[in-house]
Image 1 (tube, one colour):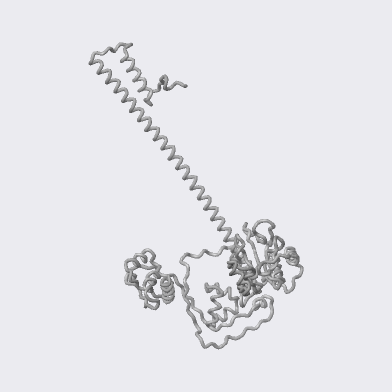
Image 2: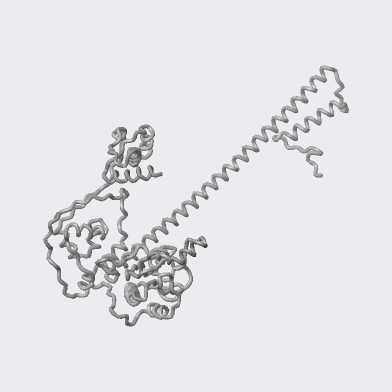
Length: 454
């Protein structure tokens, strides 16, 4: 096992450098690469098995293996251009044009020495406040970067018209969602949530007050409660202005939801907490050793982070994804318009998924119906064939009996036997021919004993 993990680590390092290992197990490894042409790590693994520092080369047989080209795209970044872009629009919008995440774009800005707008900058711009922009500082590092990234070979689906319209609407300055500094005249659900939090006596392991079914789906510390309520109030008012509503379900899995395009999207606001493991004191360790226990009460301690996430939960409500979250240079108060786009896109995605699922269900039902009808026709055809075979066998049995009776009669005549009307042989031949007629499916007749009811 130690050799295995050492080889695996060496393989990963070599793959990171773009090299492939040469294996002494030629036929074995070639067979595997033939089955899995993209899995060059098999050759690297075999080559690294002897020594973690062994020099790895491309196996000879791979020169004749047709490996599909990896789909990569190279994005170029110029320092001055990037500086103008990130100070003209939010980083999230600029990142979408480059086809990367905002985190990746921030890293690129750091490498090029491009300063980013501080926290709350775009909220001040939307409010019409005067803001200052620092000049592009001097930089001793590179002024241009070319970064290659792998892209999905599958064509991306075009953005739904509803999402594009929502994006254009949310990009307008007059539609900017602002969070009040003080909670005034809150929405009824927000006011109910505030009262419920103040009255709640239930706390989870982190020390956060928990609501059973009252109020909105919020899980935050007491220090972040006022901020969370102001965010949810701004969100509720923004939804109302857009013809939607933030609702609450008493029964069922969804506590807070938005209904759009026939889809109920559960919404949740939560604060992350940093967990650390507590070491038990010596006397408790001694007790655990005596009792054989491996776990102990209050094993973990939690520290609030004041970092919030607001978004749509999955069907089980365990994770919040997709969502907006506090970042180093942006708070979720500045991204509520982005959340409106996320809600629109997720509603469309779930609607299309439900339609595809319904179409798949109908297709499956239609295939099942056709399969049943075909199997039923096949069953009936086999029954007809079986009856045909039985009738042919009965007809052949009848013909054999008639031929046998005729042969007996002919032999009796040659032997000069008595064939009078009352002779036993004549009665037997008449009986045999009646039974042949009874077996023959082409003759409609009845016979005593065999056809009589009991």
